[in-house]
Image 1 (spheres, rainbow, N blue to C red):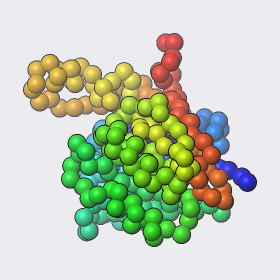
Image 2: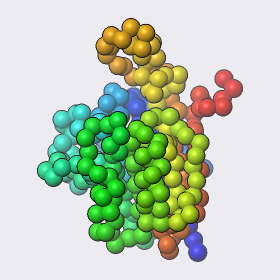
Image 3: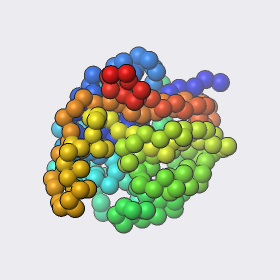
Image 4: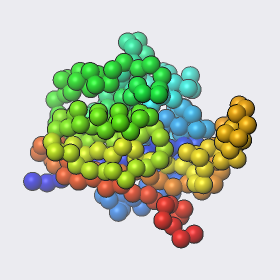
Length: 266
C-alpha cells in the first residue's frame, strides 16, 4: 500500500502572499515531495479577488489547481477565464449560469484527483446548500481521490461539513478566516480535516490587511479603504498524505513557512 501527498496553500493575500509563494514553494516541494499542489487564490489580487494574469502567475509557480471562495467574482476580468478550461474552481453551490465550475480533475502518475470548492452559508452571502451540493458532486465522481476546499466563516459549520463527508472524500480543508487552527486530524472514516489552513500573506497584519487601517475602523466605526499590508509574508497550509488505492487519508500536518512564521524568535 503506497501513499502520496497533497500540499495545500492557504488563502494567498495580495502581492506579499504571491511573493512568499514564489520564494517558498520550491523549498516546500523539496521538504514534502507532494504529488499535487493546490492553493486558494481568492484574495490574490490586491486582497480581494483574482485576475487571469495572477491566476497564471500562481499556476506557473508549480500550483496544479486554484480554489476560490466568496470573493471569486470581485474582478470582472476573471469571468471568461473561469470557463477557459484552466484548473481553477469557484464555489460549486451557486445558481446555474454562473461562470466556471466547482469541480476540476487533475491527474499525475496515474492518480486522478477531484478538486472541489464550496462555500458555507453562516455569516456569508447567500449560497445554495453545501451539504446537498457535495452529495451531488460525489455522486458524479469516478475517482476515490477527492479534495474539498470548504470556504466558510463558522468553525461549527466547517466541522459539521467534515463529519458529513467523512469516509467519502480524502480531505476537507477549511479556508476563509485566514487564521490557522490547531485541530488537524483524521476522522473515523478516513477523511483528513482542519478547520482553517490559514493564509499566505503579510505579517504582522490583521488577516492580511494593514493593521493601522483596521484599527481605525474598529476605533471609530467609520468606513476606511482596506489595503493589503506590506510586511513580509508567511505561507500557511497543510500536507495531507493519501492512500493510493482507497483515496482515504493516512495523515495530515499543518505548517507555516517564512522568516516571520509563528514561533519565530525574530
